[in-house]
Image (cartoon, rainbow, N blue to C red; front, side):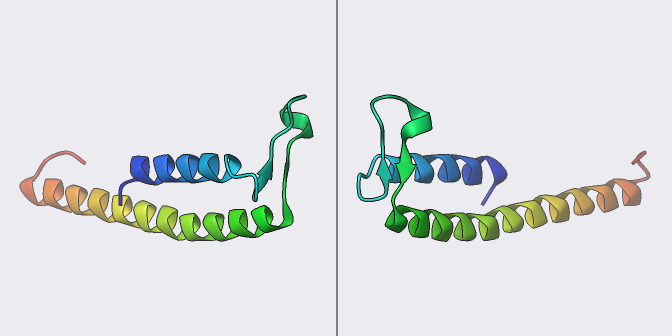
Length: 80
């Protein structure tokens, strides 16, 4: 999965959790007074842990792609 897709899933996932009253209590006064429920904190942590794995995979994939591009350029005699 690419980095931009991971970002979209991370943001979208948290936003969806915030729209569920079982997980997030939104205050009409403002965001400073909104709070995660205990169940919401658990789900948020699970989501974050899952996403950190995807972030690491995306970073590793991008690094591998860049390394391969540098090797190919080097073999072609291009400046790297």
